[in-house]
Amino acid sequence: MNVISETNSIERRIVINAPRERVWRAISTAEQFGTWFGAKLEGQTFAPGKRIRGQITICGHEDAWFDVVIEQMEPQ
Image (cartoon, rainbow, N blue to C red; front, side, top):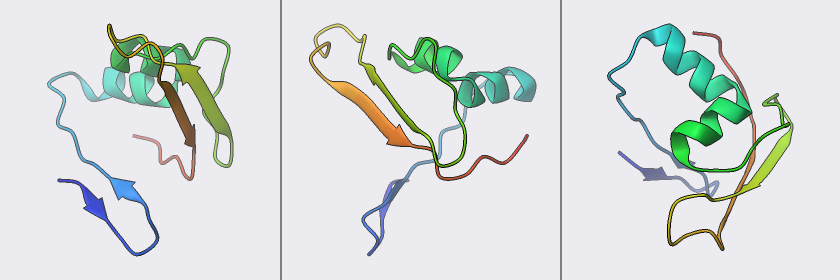
């Protein structure tokens, strides 16, 4: 479900059929996140308050960018 609040934020929940530890590594490590979700994020680190930016690698969308600021990280 996507929710747009009055603060202009978007939240999304995704259920992934994989062990919790593997999913945590994939969503908490920039390079693995990029591999799973199609963005060049090599050499970057996810951390609260940090901006992450990389080119999308999904065929037909290479002209787009993944660009976020990590607000908060809660361990698995």
